[in-house]
Amino acid sequence: MKKTIWSRLVICFLIAGIMFFLLLNTYGMQLLERRLTEDKKDQLMDEAKLISSEYMNNFYDDKMSLDNLNIQLKSIDTFLGIRVWIVNYAGIIIADSAYSRNAKGKSIYDIDPSLLDNTFTKNVSYDDIFFEPMLSLTHKINYNYKVRGYILLHTPQQGITDETNDYLDVINICFLVFLPMLFLLFVYIYNITAVPLKNLMKAAKAYSSGNYNYALVLKGLSEYRDLGAAVSYMASELSKLDDYQKKFVANISHDFRSPLTSIKGYAAAIMDGTIPHEMQDKYLNIILFETERLTKLTSGLLELNSFENNGTFLDIATFDINNIIKRTAETFEGTCREKKITLNLVFSSKQTIVEADMGKIQQVLYNLIDNAIKFSHNNSQIKVSTEEKGEKVFVSVKDYGIGIPKDSIKKIWERFYKTDVSRGKDKKGTGLGLSITKEIIQAHNENINVISTEGVGTEFIFSLTKASE
Image (cartoon, rainbow, N blue to C red; front, side, top):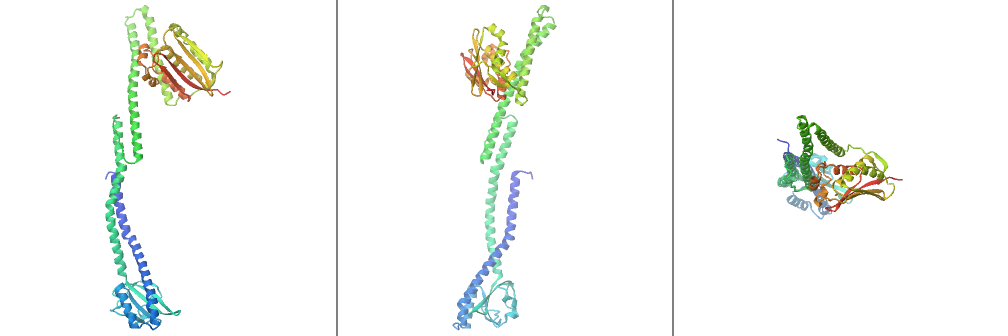
């Protein structure tokens, strides 16, 4: 049989049923018989005390004759099924409630002297007196503070066995009725455990085959519902990752194809002489420029990958962020001159000392200023400023250019993402600058935010930790 939860539950059900039945009809039967025997003993003791107080005192006070005593004892035998012997102090049975095999006149010492020594005796069997094994109880008769004789009560032991069997029959019937209920309980357990697991397995197979739209609905225990929600969430994330990978491949193919096409085309033209010798330097410069684009794109991808794998270690140092802003701004003098853009540097203090990785922060500033220049109009200005607030320093790069469309603001941090406007205006960007920028700031456990209005301008603000004095 295949090892499944259902097969295990069926085996457990059968084992539980068989074990309970065997336990009930062996050890349970012994306990029940013992308990009924004790109850019978208590009943005989109560009856013996009653006979001693009600009849024997009257007998010794000469208020009741031996014949009348026999009549009363026979009534007890008839109605209660208890055989009564009255034994005098000499051990002679002076009264016997039985109609047949009467032991009246016999000496108890001749029959079994041990009966007088034991309060309660099982399996008493005398072929000439009893028809079957008996339970016997001995009770002393005390009169005027003296032992005057004994009361011996006998009841068939088979009665205990029959009563035990009757009780067991009832219990076994109840057990047989309970078995279907127990089976239903096992079915219920199966439905709340195995069925959700099967549904999870089906969903896992569907998701592994790429069917991320498979609807997983789990009912029952909250733990399974939570697990189902977690699996569904995982599937949605995998779907997003799958879409991202497709977009990633499409974008990287696009961004690699363009420079490779130029490099291949111009190189082939130079080789076959299509491009005159005097024009080769121009096209070799284009090939070099496209090669640098590919190098920059590859470096950006490697850098992002190192951030994702926690492979980049920050070289934290103390430095003046104002000075780094000045040095970075100087690298854009030529570009700003061409577009007639003015870079305004506004600092809250002469020196603003921060703790960070100076090289990485310079890269952040380069990316943000480069972006601001790309999307600024000619004859405009860009403002770069610092402001100290408590233990933080906030750096702002603000332009007054074309701005970012509202539906694109949340996407600008994605790899290769370029708005339609930016693609039309500058097709040579890698689309990785802002992704790298955000990863660097997050690696410093800091934040970067963007405020932008289309047609008005864009402001990027990031925080750094102020150096302790």
